[in-house]
Amino acid sequence: MKQLLKCAAAGIVVGLFSAGQASAQEVIVANVIDGYPARAMWVQELTNFFIPEVDKRLAETGNYKIDWHESYGGTVVKPKGVLEGVQLGLGDIGIVTTIFHSSKLPSQAISAVTPFVSADARAVARAVDEIAQEYPAMRAEFDAQNQVYLTTGVVLDTYQLYSREKVEKLADLEGAKIAGAGMNLRYVEGIEGAAGVRGGLTDFYNMLQTGLVDHAMLWPEAAATFKISEVAPYMLDVDLGAVNTKTMTVNKDYWEKLPEEVRTAISEAAVAYRDHLADLAMERAAASHEAYTAAGGTITELSEDQRRAWVASMPDIAAEWAAGLDAEEQPGSEMLRAYLAKLEQAGSVSMRDWTAGLGN
Image (cartoon, rainbow, N blue to C red; front, side):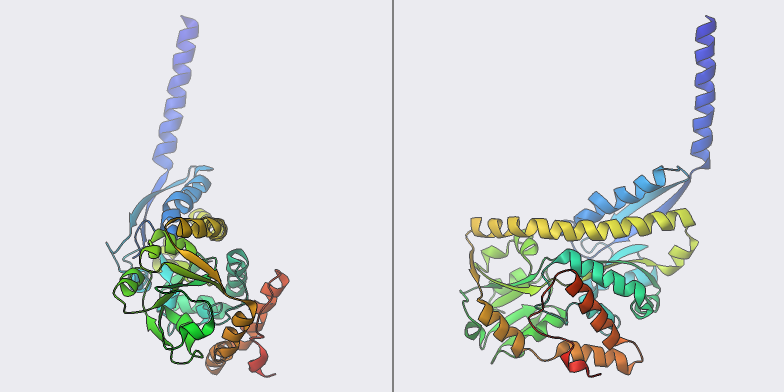
């Protein structure tokens, strides 16, 4: 009996302690938004990876718990509306597709203006994030939109070309209409008669199906996810390059009210999410190629000579980009040199010297 009473008393103490812990724990609401559907890889991994990573860190002390509210696929904002949505507080945390906002977020185009440099999503993600930490200009662009930059996201291993008809050489693209988004529309300017047609990932299927375009530039994982093989049964393996197109941000007003421990947990989880996404993009690339051919698609590899001809045909978009930032008294040229040096140190070999047009 005495033993039972001792156990009961211990249980009461534990229960009171637990109740005390529960009452002391602060619950914080976090609204996470993206305009893309939940099946998009980076959105899936917000749910499957980022949120659990934050929860895991906060559970170590038990001081705070986040009540997550997730809104994707246009329920709060469309894909192009995340930047404004987070700015206005429609979402606390969001994934901004930066290619839609070249005028407001010009420095985010740093990897897009350097095609044919690296197809390694991991190296590009780390390099862009390091530039953001070393050069305040990149983070200041988001600050001007009432947001705090958390991390970049490289969700594509490399842009490839998907076509309605087979493409084997650059001449096959002459006079063609090629869908793209943002800076990659400029990749086709040096191809005779070719015209870039602006679109988004969720538009490409219909654009190809209706014949509005003959080709689309996107990456293998997205081609598999959005069933592009049904309307574009030919892929040209060209390795245009990995590009950062996603940036995780948080509303600045919301951020400033968060306890330091919560901010640390979110920041650390964001970097882990960055690396996880890049790893996943690389892992899924080969599987996506297999899925494409299994679905009836045909893959043709562009020759090295033709790849060199393509990159040589492009305008000097890197120098133009850097000059635009330099004119605004931002270190565009310096950022470009530093970024390319980081990729070179990571083992990337560029097919064109994108610093050649910068001058001294």
